[in-house]
Length: 285
Ligand SMILES: NC(=O)c1ccc[n+]([C@@H]2O[C@H](COP(=O)([O-])OP(=O)(O)OC[C@H]3O[C@@H](n4cnc5c(N)ncnc54)[C@H](OP(=O)(O)O)[C@@H]3O)[C@@H](O)[C@H]2O)c1
Image (cartoon, rainbow, N blue to C red):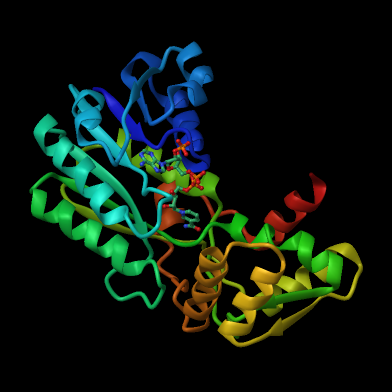
């Protein structure tokens, strides 16, 4: 069985490839990337590297030839992703893959998060293709929150617009393990997995835990979405990214990333990596 991971050069893709390499011969794995040079290390381990750009349909036919199962990792090019993903789905259909797994968004059909429509539209394209599918609906990565630690430590303030929203984040590593398990598991018909951490936290709780672990006073200051976007922009982020991050916080305030179904821990067979452990790990680096 040949398994391909599309966007294997990204942070999640690399972790999925590592999990797959623990389970399968490298020769049965294909890394689909737009810049093969970026994954020379995978080629050196025996993984077949094929060039495939989500924006170039012709490149995707060659990339997916002979593939049985495909992980379509969502593109990072927000705004044009539905068309890009549609190109991959069309090529997967032409290639006759027996499973397409897609990294969607938690509760994509009902989510208040700004990214939800792009993910749900992609899910709809996959359903319309008639290909057997697994929707891997991802919560936000824990790394999105630990990434906020340096600024919080510098100022003593964790800024955000997420209010008291409950956030069931999960590490990329746990989500990558889940993807590898689905890709290598028994065929189980069409499935939708809501993949989130076992425990949730608010940004106030995150700030308090950071304070506890560093012995410093770190407070969470909730501000309106527009003010948070302006603060991120003032800190040097491009306008579109600042607005996107602030919009995400506003979605979190509506519990957009809350889930208590424990489907991720059920799938990976152990509790998910929690916020306390993730903060500890970040501070130890
Ligand atoms: N759940 C979350 O919290 C969260 C957070 C951030 C992102 N995401 C989504 O999850 C995806 C994976 O996350 P990540 O952390 O691995 O992101 P990442 O490290 O930024 O990787 C993005 C991947 O997408 C590839 N890509 C972008 N445009 C492409 C195109 N036109 N054709 C082929 N590949 C293309 C990139 O290829 P290159 O290496 O060539 O650039 C890279 O491999 C992201 O792309 C994004 O959709 C989710």
